[in-house]
Amino acid sequence: MRILLTFFLLLSTLLSVAQTRLTIVEFNTENLFDTRHDSLKDDHEFLPDSPRHWTRTKYWQKLNRIGQAIIACGEDSSGWSLPDIVGLCEVENDSVLFDLTRRSLLRKARYEYVMTSSNDARGIDVALLYSPFSFRLIKADTLRVKPMKNMRPTRDILHVEGEIENGDTLHIFLLHAPSRMGGELYSRPFRKHVMERLCNAIDSLRRTYTEPKLLVMGDFNDYADSPSLLLAYEHGLFNVSAGVQGRNGAKGTYRYHGEWGSLDQMLISDNLRSWVAGCRINDAPFLLEEDTKYGGVKPRRNYNGMRFNNGFSDHLPLVLRLQH
Image (tube, rainbow, N blue to C red; front, side, top):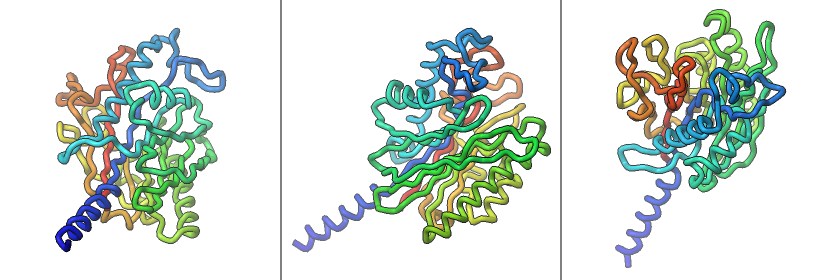
């Protein structure tokens, strides 16, 4: 009887550990547009009659490519499981998310999603996919970033609050900071402005909740040692993705003129640091192609210039595993 009781206690412990394991992905999908024109947005570049000839066939190929990349993020040394939470940057609208989650390779994953509806001129937003089997949505809201002087309207910050299987509440912030258009120095204040908006929200959250568990991820258009990230660290966030690499040659999530760098980041609050089971870049071979100009490999993007490449994105996904 004692042996049987010990066995069930051990089994219960193992199941508890398994229930609190989360795989979280951040991925800039690079122009995940549908083929229909939104009269309020500048989406002309991705229409059937545009120079890119963005047709329904290419659109569905792109959706399935993104689904393939997300599925591959569930693989690690212990096996494979579908990612629990996926943060996506550069998605156009709800129709794209519906097609991705209900009609693409991901249709059997049964992901639910929430997304922003920003004032970005091109109409691109951020979206969070989540498995309702491991993440129970409590609420989602949007942090609008009011443009400062000389700053174009940018993407909203998505805040999602949800319960994981051990009963803990996780607060997730997903952002896509302004690009470096005009030069890094010129555009730096814009990214810092977005980070200030985020940090103010986090400070407010900490006044409302006792030691909230925080995850901030997205395309920051900045590196781990950039001023905007330094501001995040001052507000008690730890960059779990700093310095991570892939297994097949990627030394960052993005490659420009032959140089690897990581514009995508994952930050966590200090009370999640002991949960980190690993963080890496998913550079599965099918996500890469030969860099014929600079040597080595680079992300296999959807277009090389104006030539359709039937690829994935100019970014590689970040994968974080939490276990407690």
